Image (cartoon, rainbow, N blue to C red):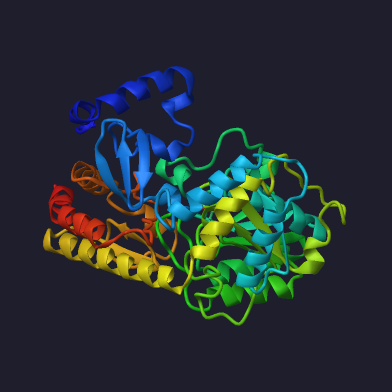
Length: 438
Ligand code: PLP
C-alpha cells in the first residue's frame, strides 16, 4: 500500500477515528466498501455535507461523486429536505401506526412508475429485494431464483452469490455463512446472455419463481442491458410462468423520473420492482411494488408475511417525499449535463495519458473501467487494471474529489453539482490520469 503513510499524515483525524472504530467495529466500518480495502489508505470520516461537497473531520473539502451511493440526487443538506425533516421530527419520530406521509409517498411512486399498482414501504434495498423474492416464491409456489453474475441486490442470503458491489471489491466469490442448500436455490447466469437464460428455463423453467435483475447494472461498474435483453427476460419468464423482478434500488427515480423503466424505451413491464436510495432522500426508506394481483398476497391481505417496526417511518418518508417532489425535469437535465461533462473529460484525460479505459453509462449513471473494449458482463468487468484505478482514485482524492473507493462502483452526480464543482473535478482529472498511467 504505497499511499498509506502519506494518507495518514494528510488525514490525522480520520486515522485516529479509524483506530478507535477498529477497536469496537469489525474493520472500523459499518459497510465494507467504505473501508478503502481495494484502493488502500485511510477512509475519510466525513463531518458534514452541503450541496455537491463533503467535508472530512480534518477540515478538507471534497467534491462528492458518490452521493451516499445514490440517494443524494439533490446534493447534501438540501434546504427543503432538511426543513421537511425538522418539521416531521418535531411532530414525533415513529408512531408504529399508519401515517399520512406513507400514503403520499406510495401515491408518488405509483404515479411515477406505471407498472407499480401497489407498493409496500420498507427500510432498506436489501429488505425490498428479500421481500420481493419471498413474494415471488409465494405467488408461484416455486423455489428457484435466477440472478446475474455481478448484480448486487443487497446482502440477502440467497442473493449473495456472485454478487457485485462490495463482494466484487473484496474479490469474494460469495459470502461465508450462506448455507449451500440456500445457495443451491439460486441460479447464477452471465448477464446479457439470452442463450444461457433460455437453456436454464428449458431445463428447470417450471421450478423458477423469478428472475431478478438490476434494471441496468451499476454494481460491477455500469453495464446497461443490451438492446432487447430486457424484452427477452420478459418473454422467457412469461413463457414459463415465472415473475420478472426489476431491481431499481439504484436506478429508480435517478435514470428518469420513474427510473430505468421509463428511460429505456420498453413496451414490456416487469411484475415486481424494488426501490431504495433516492426515494429515501438520505434516510432509510425503500419499497417494493408491482402487479396488484401479486401484491395482494402480502400480509395482512394474503399469506406472505412481511413487516417492519420502522417501515414507512414519518421522518424518512418526509425526506423521501420532499426529494421526489423536487425531482423535476430540470433536475434530470442537470444530472445529464453534469454527467456528460465529467465523463467526457475523464475519458479525454485518460486518452491523453495513454491509459486504456472504457466509460459506460446508464442515463446519468456512469463508471470508468480501466480496460479497453465494451463491458457486457461480470467477466469483462473483472478484467480491468484495479491498480491503475487505485492510483487514479488517490490522485483525485488528494485533489479534493471523492470518488467511489472501488473500480466496481458507479459514479453519482447530483443536481447541486454547479459549474464550480464540475470545474474542480475537471481540473483534477489530468493529474489523476497521469498517476493512473503509473
Ligand atoms: N439493489 C441494488 C441494485 C443496490 O444497488 C443496492 C445497494 O447498493 C441494494 C439492492 C441494497 O440496498 P441497501 O444497501 O439499501 O440494502
